[in-house]
Length: 241
Image (cartoon, rainbow, N blue to C red; front, side, top):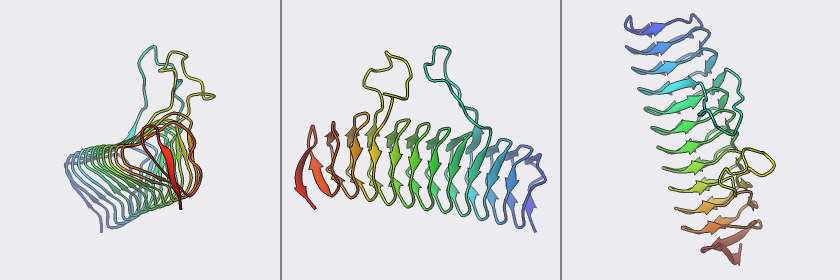
């Protein structure tokens, strides 16, 4: 039997079994809530959101934010008005998930993280607290992105990757002066099983092969071959695995 506070604003009737909705949560129409979901106080969930079984959403999270930019913003913002969150996920305190984001099952989204439009996150991933995943980012299965990391738009990260704290991805060598064009506004492409140390900076458009290791504090300015260890500023090959 579900427990829905009379102090919550619930506009949907698409609610599964054994759901708990705490006071002051706001659930809009056309939200689909699976079984055994827990929604904490002051959560806001906008229309056309699907929440899988067993997921828990912590206080002040905002799901289904409309992506916007300032008047002269060079990138045209395009999105579908939907959010899909898989089963058995944990959505952290004060995190923001924009429309057109997809989060696979068994993921943890850390406190105060931001997940932008057109992001696709595979199953069993961790996004650390205060991390920012920008638009059109793809993250494979079982990958971990730790605290305070920033992943720029048009980035792809493979399966089983480990990205440590304070890692930054960039995507525009022209600092926005040429406007937005996907032909050159591209972030890094990481293969599978890549390991990235703390404080690494990726310049735009670099490719990192499967199994590579990037030493802490490195600045990656060029492609990294598979199964190599690089480090330094700029990062250079120090050994093969």
